[in-house]
Length: 232
Length: 232
DNA sequence: CGTGTGAATATTGTATACAGTGAACAACGT
DNA sequence: ACGTTGTTCACTGTATACAATATTCACACG
Figure (cartoon, rainbow over the protein chains, first blue to last red):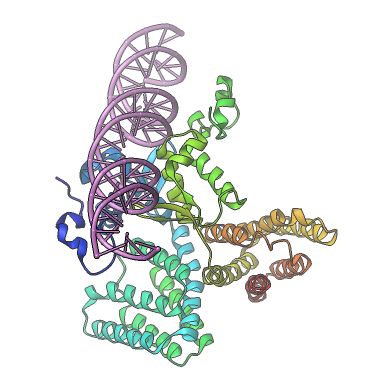
């Protein structure tokens, strides 16, 4: 009946006494979360195209839920920047003009620089090990032409760096920005593959040396280079 | 019956043919917006204290609306960072620990630097005039000890700078951050008054000269100095 | 006394119903 | 033909009702 993934329905009662002290209700994600994730994926993968109207009842029917969780998901997506909502006139998938896209990179560059600087200052040995693992995997994939694996590895790299920086607000802000960037430039992504991983390696080297200045510069330059590449 | 400001009820029919071509429905703000603003104000001015539970039905009753607009407002506030929501366990006013507060300044500093740099590159003569107006008003207020006027002028200064930078995403991000910073440090604010306006003047000077590097450095340093002052 | 167990209550999550607004279109006059 | 007006339909905004979960408190038991 319900196409949305409902994890908890797969969990029979006996999970109640499973290891983590989390209650059953905590596992049981609200529908709004399921709808949010499903809708975001649908927008990113092009099921809903930019500018397309998102009618609450349609979406609710599609996922077989009521309009309430749907509305909540739409509002969340508008904050994330994937949809635009006009009062009394409904929601549509956001349309990116060139200016907006440029703004994304402008904001992301100094933040990515900050991440690299903080990571250089605060990284633990374990952080460094993990960064090098991801770096190795990404470099190998780029070298061997497995381009389809690169977007996920790229995301993991930047998330790992943000984790090493130890600033959750920063990590969250960046995660949102890069989600949208990946969406906007979905078509052209996975270009620039080897260049990109060379730049990642340079960031990790600076982080390893605890050289905050160099790390910051290379982090910011990395995003600027990506922006330039996308502007073709 | 309804304590929320409902602008449209004050507008008789004949406003329909008033100057701006906006429709009546566009003026007629959704209740969620009214509740959102009212709740945020209540949190900022201390009516609701950090950690306090925000029960949907209570708030709905207080503003004499149903739970739906209330829920939507609460979700929006959680995105803005004023409240924390746990699934199935409701919302409470966010509590700042020192770490979180530090993160705010860490993220804001490079963004404010970016704003100053972009403003230096893109400002129009009109932007500069406006910035100098605000600067003059703020400096005068600081010099004459009208401390109560400073927070608003400070906000206006930073908003004007962001406007001159011509990046709406950046302006929006910063507006959210500084809202929260002002809330967190409400008690200690309006200190540092003259220092702060000297720093503002330095930023405007760099913006006037179109010196992007100097503007960026002074913008970021201004926030770092503010952070240091708050850490007493 | 503390501790666990259960019922009762409070509160959130979800669905449905209704009201109000905007947009499209047909009927009408000019 | 063209614009104007009235009407209808689709959709969002809001309220209410119900279901599911969390929390509280009383009470029995050790």
